[in-house]
Image: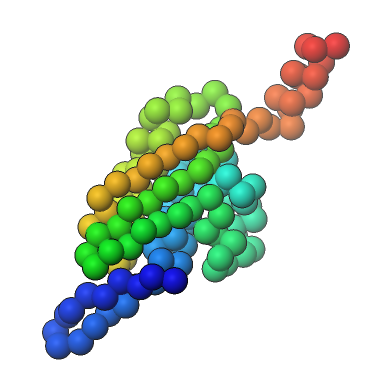
Length: 129
């Protein structure tokens, strides 16, 4: 596990990759239109879980003062994917930068699918029959 070292006031502050990944994962799940991370963790589940479970679908590279973040997400069906992903990038950048002081230099988002409600799934199945 790589760790970030910041020289502040005569000492070091170390922020692990896991901490940045957790912050990014929580910020992602709080973004409207994001149904789940690629690992299948939805917003309802994240309320019951903490730590590494929130990191599913998130990978980070933390340098001395910068961080790069890669995300794999599911978007709610019917939402404008490009708008949801742009807001996702804004939310993660703000959360990570404000909580860690790191400069987030890039946030790459890969949309791996769309999420349907139970009613939408039943309607699709009805139409296919």
